Image 1 (cartoon, rainbow, N blue to C red):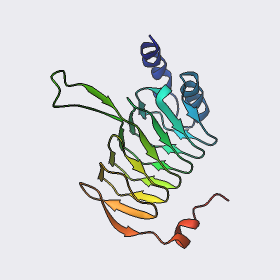
Image 2: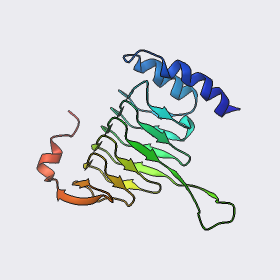
Image 3: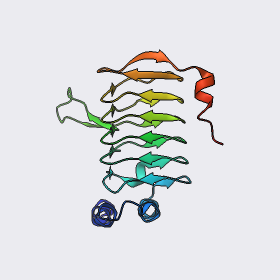
Image 4: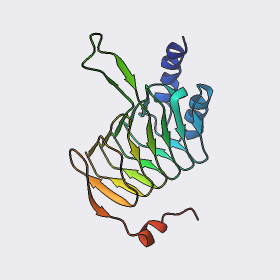
Length: 170
């Protein structure tokens, strides 16, 4: 029943003007999402189950982002999820006779940028101060203060802690 109501409410979410962040945040909270201050969710963002979503302060979910949160997805503070990125917190056990559904969490730390069209898979923890490159496929947890890119995503460089501190809240 709740899923059906969310599908109806999503129409008001999807067709709201871009600047109506407060309206979309209110709808998400109404359906159980936990949102911090200054959250900006764009109208074309697809959120499967708002009750499985937790966003910290100053989080941006840009155009076309897919949040397939069969399992819980928790995103820290000052995170940008760029256009058409996909966070997928569910998979199937291909070895079971019934192709059993597996609901796995995703956790994104503070001060993270997930670039355009990146994919974050089930049971992944993206550490704080991380950049995930465009179209990267992240299927394993990351280390902090690093840039990851490629398919599968690999650490391609460290981020100096002095540089990373520039992104601390003012």
